[in-house]
Structure formats: C-alpha cells, structure tokens
Image (cartoon, rainbow, N blue to C red; front, side):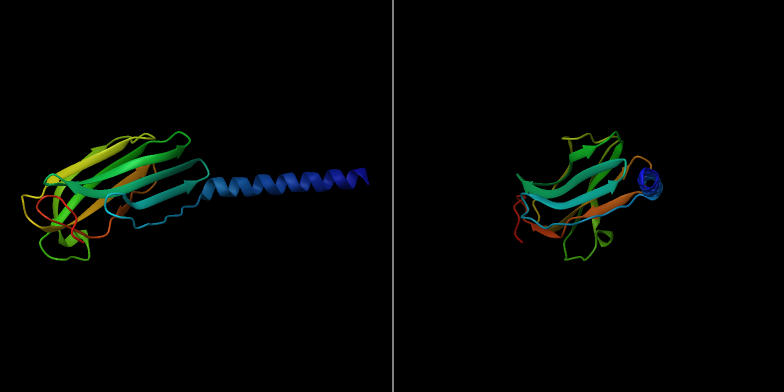
Length: 162
C-alpha cells in the first residue's frame, strides 16, 4: 500500500515536471485590444510567457495644436528588456491602415521600464486631419509585435472631432 502511494506521487511529480518543461520551451502568447475615449488609453496589449508578463498600453490624444501618441509599461513581471517604437501617422482623408498615411513623428526607447511612458508628438499645422498611433515592441528576444489605435479625427487645435 505504501509503495503504491509512493509510485503515484512519483508519477505525478514526473508528469508535472514534464508539463512545466514543455510549457517553458514552447511558451504562449495572448493579446487583446480595447477601445476607450481619446483622452484615455486606446489599445492594451498583453504578452504572456512562462518567464515574463508585460502589459503595454498605447494611447492617442491631442491639445494645444498637437497630437501625441504614447506607450506606457503598466506592469512587468520578471527581468526583461522592452524595446518600443511609438509612431504617429496622419492623413487628410479617411484611411483603413497607417500604411496609407504619412508618418509624422517617431520615438524609440531601448528599454521601457515598468511605470514609464514613451511619447511622440506632432503639430497639427492648424489643419484638421485623421490621426493614428502605432506601437512596435519587442520583449527580450521575442519577435517584434505591433498594435495600432483606431483612426481619430483631430481639428487644427488638437481637439478630437470624431
């Protein structure tokens, strides 16, 4: 009876170690996107792996004749290097994708630490245009990923019209 319990416990431990090893080798990723008012965060990106958990928020807003895009590292679990580009694109006409728009501004940071924000700004030039923010990021040596906000219409003063 005691030998049977030991065998069951040993089998369970071997099974758990095998599962954790498989999980650690392969990892997994999930992502979600949220929509919020322009003055708040517009896109939330979550990347998960067994060794790291990072939450980056991408936002777009405007004021005083300028539009800004920003990325904030709201949470990171574990040691990591989070490389981030944040970009602003504009267009006089409605566009489905940033690829059909003009790149107005770009900022880069080699390591966006928890609680820190990177921002890029561009002048509206006093003109009403459509704007979109884009974030490209890389956590440690994982593949580059990206998120974009929805399209927003700002007037020449940087106020949202949409």
